[in-house]
Length: 185
View 1 (cartoon, rainbow, N blue to C red):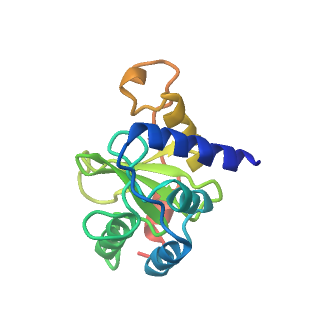
View 2 (tube, rainbow, N blue to C red):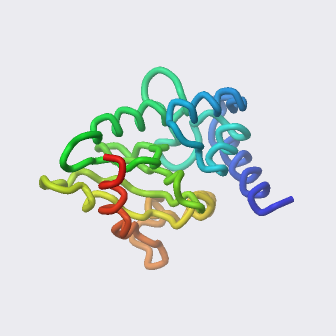
């Protein structure tokens, strides 16, 4: 068993214990459909979560969005945000970053499907003051596996019990934001 296999199993166990009504996982055809709509492959670990754990409904706080479907979904939110970013002077949403979870107040957790580790980013638009959106993007975790580990351990900045702890890593400005927002706009 690989470390990724172990992580997926632990996420599945936590998801099942947190929710009695967990959606069924999606099949390979549904993942392929999502990727066709997106125009790029999902990060492999993210695809495994949707294919082996559930179609959203698990994870920190507000829980992961469903992959596809009516209402708010990973694909729907991504396409809406990218459409609003194409052809404008100051794009809001970078290509390849799929929103996986809403924190409320227009804030999102997103996975960078173009990064090898699947960086997890925080989009926090509330302090936006006009001009570039780069100030609204933060690196939450260097990779999706790391982000999931903080959720499983209860040590993420988003955990109520961890708030204010000196050991909790706060999201830092995403140093790639300016470059990524200017590519494919």
